[in-house]
Length: 527
Image (cartoon, rainbow, N blue to C red; front, side, top):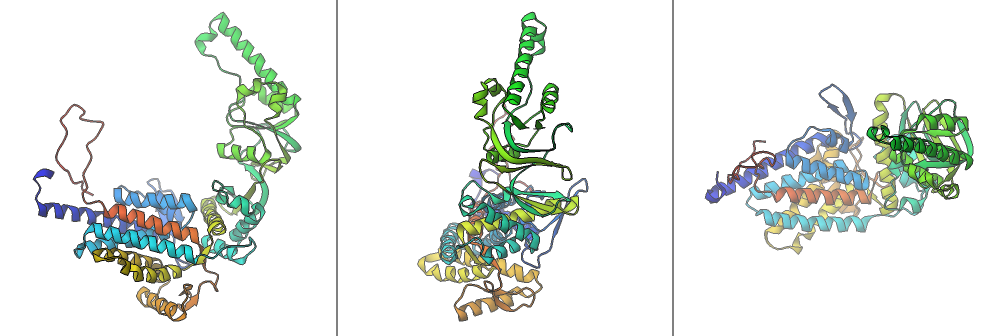
């Protein structure tokens, strides 16, 4: 079909087809995660073509590992990933609300409301909802407040041991560090099979010492961190065939040995290396009683350097005078290899205080899930400390839904239908939580609405065990305000982006047909 020749009716049908296609794709993604939300939510099994299985109820894990090709579906998944990267939790809530917004938006368009008016109302309603969350947030004044444990329990899917680890780590690290934009408490978490749950001030390097002849434990240790290989500089094969090239090779070998001798004379006890270590360095440093760890992951290397107060150095930097190299060294009270868990621990560093949360797992199959759970709990605790908390269990969204619906008087014309979409989408989390618990969502949501109106509170929700209306705050069901803010914002952004699409055109392959005339036909892909 040529776009210029298309008639008005065909244009409308094409736009509606695009909207319905995208809405169906979003609905399919929402259906994949909605059964996991709430205390009665169930798990999802993901199976790849090799038969490998992942069982989880973590929304972002499900979305990330799904085999998805539809572009609108990928948009929703990308928004969920952004939510995870920003605050570390709330991806399922964001996905469910986005699905609700898109569904309601499509319903309004099918009733004859112009898409532009729906989008205008959605923007207005989302802005009002965000204002309400900020106004209703309660602040955490003390890191020992029980509310942090409750938040960790909910985000950590009722794992008492994980909640205790996370809260203890937050207390050790302190409010100032947790408030830093670039610090993530979730990055301090390591899960290992056979480990005991533990929180300690220090860093784990997930490697073993290079040589069994090296010491297993050192104290009051000077630490050298090499962001490179600990090897002589290389010379090309052709250069070695010449007399000058061979002489250069010999000089580099001598220079390398001199550099190693500097390390020994400086009293370095531990060397952490990003890449490989030459055999001659292995032998010489082992004889000197130096603990060497090679091929350290870059993340671990940087955390270790920060903790011990070391500046990372390249191998060419070892040419410097010994007094200059000394300025790159860090210090640690103790560094040792845990032979059972096959990792190195650095404790009492002279640099930045670092806490590590070690989460134990009974089998290799559950290591990944235990780590994901702990990271969610850590992210939620940090978010609550930074931005406060609100009643959970979908109760806050019901209260905000009423306020958003009341705000429609601030708009004129058909844009008010877009506001209705937001008000309706805000009810979706509680509806799904109640449904997953085995109750009638229409009945229970109305009970909550009436109870909130009668008691003038935003914290009433449904107890998923009894089905009764209870106070979420009194029952310890709370969520970080930042998680709610980002979930609502993300849902609004993806819904608007999808509603704005009125035509789907298959792109020409940029890597083929470069010499052919451009295709002016609009091809609707078969999704």
